[in-house]
Length: 183
View (cartoon, rainbow, N blue to C red):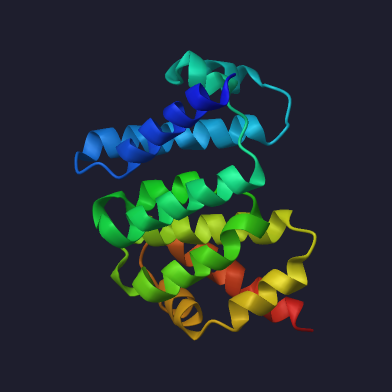
């Protein structure tokens, strides 16, 4: 795929992610998540083939490098800070970004905005953190980074007491992993 065509396709997606229209923004984040999944090098599953029908031909041809993923993460995290109604979807999509790219920036956004998250956004944020901690072989660095962020730690403690069972379970799993990791 020619660079100009690729850049146009990504620019359009980023513009849609920044859109003031909820449906356009949500669908663009869904498409970015699908593109991220395709870029991780796994063999296509039957589920992925079904998901591919939601992508344009140009989007299907794009493989997102680490630099591209950093740009995607930046756009998704900007959604969290600007559109509370799309925070859950942004974290759901962000979960597909590599941990070494997204973990630090996500912690920063959670520390800044986590107290304002509804239960679904908090759950998706915990889900992303937990996934990155489970998948990253440099777990100790991520745990150290997590434990060093008082804002995130405060959110996790509050979320661990939530009436939303999924949220409380995931927040507690992260807290327990951090405690175990320091031993």
